[in-house]
Image 1 (cartoon, rainbow, N blue to C red):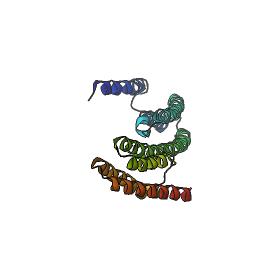
Image 2 (cartoon, helix red, strand yellow):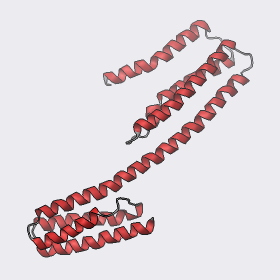
Image 3 (cartoon, rainbow, N blue to C red):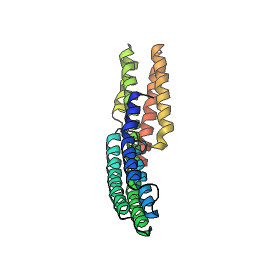
Image 4 (cartoon, rainbow, N blue to C red):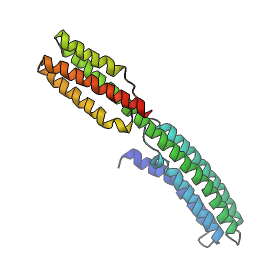
Length: 226
């Protein structure tokens, strides 16, 4: 285990250690149900606060996701802590109010937390889709551009330039239904690359024309799916 991780564990444990030392020193081990309910919910709220990094979806906006979850978890912890301390000090004979108070707080926290998680998942999925969209055009365009520079004969070079112009001007937006045709385009680009390496003029022109057909088909399909 890394030293930094050990230090984080120690830091996160300070509250639990201090709270339990004060609790058992001042209250002892014999307490009413209302006190133990408050004790348990305070610990639960603190553990939910510690779970924030695990609940945060990894992605470009991880910092934003983590902040929103940490913020609501912090509010929940402070609310549960203050409420719990009040009931621990009062120590009522009936545990009903202590339980209902903590359950109500946890209920609202759960609704807000789950709503945030759903929103974060949607945002992260949209970012992944955006990344895929950009990668398709970027990778394809860069490969075609490289082939233009490697082609010496003007006629096949012009045919590849047409592919590049069409691909570069194609919309970056994509759709799951386009996966097959986009993979076919990438496969054709790899085939075109092999023909450029072997300097096969006829195959380069034929491959370029085939790519133009596939790219136009991909763009047409995308338009129909919008």
